[in-house]
Image (cartoon, rainbow, N blue to C red; front, top):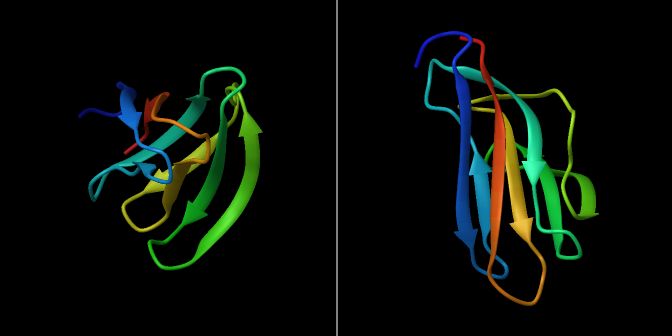
Length: 95
């Protein structure tokens, strides 16, 4: 993936499971949008894989942000709704 390429994905995530927004080394990303269906709940974490920091509990999408992600520090979106749901993200590769 080249610098300035768009990145993104949409996956079905089971209840209690998480979507890791994590590039492979040495890539680095800036994540602008996290998509969660309106009315369904999720938790956004900043993590190193061992220690999680809860950023926010959401019920709908998180749009227009600038989250930095690399292989050792990345985002995790946990499905806390009562059923499986689609979760997505997009952004830009910066390295």
